[in-house]
Amino acid sequence: MIGNILSGAGDLYDFQTEVLKTLQYNKYGIKDLRKKLEDIENILLQKRYVGDVSVKLDQKIYDKLPLKTDDDVGEIEILLENEENMTLLVHMLSLVGGSSMESAILLMFRKLLVKELAVTYSGAGKRGKKSFKILRIYSCIQRAVRKRFPLASETEIFKRCSSILATSGDGGRRQRDQSNNKVSRAATALQKGNVITESEFTTLLKLIINIQKQNDQILKLLEDQKKVHFFNYSKPLIAENLPLKTLDDFSKIEDITTSWDFSDKQAFILHLQSLGGQVLVTKVNNILRHIFTDNLACRFNFYGKGNKLPLRNTKIVDIIIDAVLSSGSSATRKEVEDSIKVWLKGAPQRVRNAELKETKCLS
Image 1 (cartoon, rainbow, N blue to C red):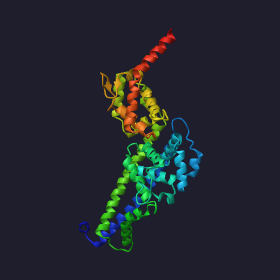
Image 2 (tube, one colour):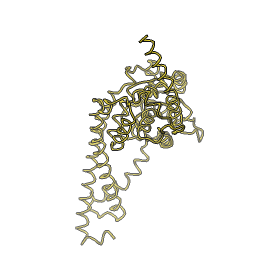
Image 3 (cartoon, rainbow, N blue to C red):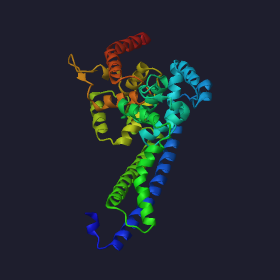
Image 4 (cartoon, rainbow, N blue to C red):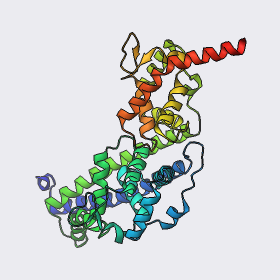
């Protein structure tokens, strides 16, 4: 029992008081760290572009945000039938900030819907509410989240959106109140000079441990953001050696990417995304053309059939797919892979066309 560890009630009270002071100190510290992290993240995000074109969202959409009525939603849904409008809204949502997937989605909702409208929706339209997941707005949120957090799954995104809609009536206060009740009771007891219960004491200890873990995570995120910030403004060194011309070049880049950490990989992904492309095929082709010469591409196909080398399961193809999927594209991994297969299949013909063109120029 925790109480038995201490010699007396006085010692217990003093120790518990110190625990509460530490808890409050850590709470303020973590709040300050989150603010600094979001400031850094927002600076980074405001520097990003869709290809090389500055973002100008349709004024009709911008003027209606946040949406207030069902009529507003209907009008926006019609405007989002235009793929350019959808792409630009995705980009705008990706700039709202948030140091985690959860906080980013919450900020996106605040940008899109007023609370009075959000409360009329649920994720799948249960309990007499309207379905949110059938809207193009939801698709925009999905794409914006994957642009910011490439590893976020569709299930995680849907679950978070459903949770926000479910608590939109009270602004999420009920969940926060429940988590703070035990801490509040313990604080009141200590202020009155009473010894708190073992259960309340254990709760305080668990909260301190959790806050310390969050502190560590935030500090790591701050360090990662600093690294990404550096790479955002300098072309990755590996890009200087592209396109790859020989199998030896390809082996070297595979070795290099194997040793990359998160910030190295993210920097190269951002570089590949900067190559542009409004539709899936263009994005994939731009990236592959940037990485491979056609002569080298002739040595590969996706599965390694017909005496060719397999591109599947290589580090570089995984990075290419991540770059496309996190660029705001609604494509699936299979669709990206199919586009890669088509580009590789066309390499021999492109080589022949280039040779024919060169022959004509020389004659």
